[in-house]
Length: 177
Image 1 (spheres, one colour):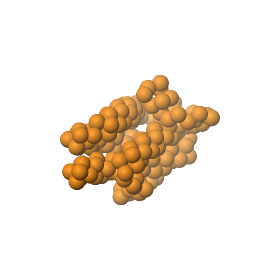
Image 2 (cartoon, helix red, strand yellow):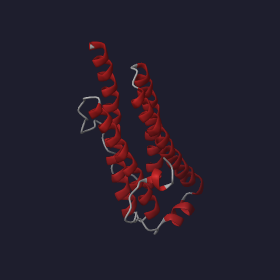
Image 3 (spheres, helix red, strand yellow):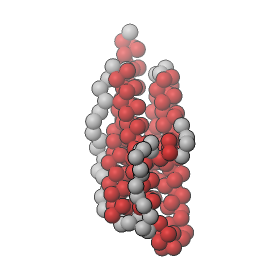
């Protein structure tokens, strides 16, 4: 019995670390959303907000699983939000953040598998797929900005930032998952 509890605790630790990473991403992406909207890059701001909503959904799913295992979901994170970024700095930063997240979550998935928790394995697997979509989006925007520069940014300037009445998030808005 003690062995099962120890295995559960390792899974809860992995889930809580992932939840803290999501809480950081939410705060970072919402800060970027506000800044992009303020810089009048509405389309980029809108997608940043939708990605933050995806991260909120991930944080909630991790919390629900932690509670199912008898743990207490964390409510904070240790990282420092990078504020006031210029548009050219946001997308390489976020690509790197998502790439690090995917790497960490693959490690957490392995811990869950090793501890015999297939439900948490499936949860990490599903969320990793969504994080990959975020990475792809950020990397593509970064490539556009690096390749096309001001031409690309001028095309985006002045676009609407409203996400409308339904905030499904970026992934669900794309028809995935």
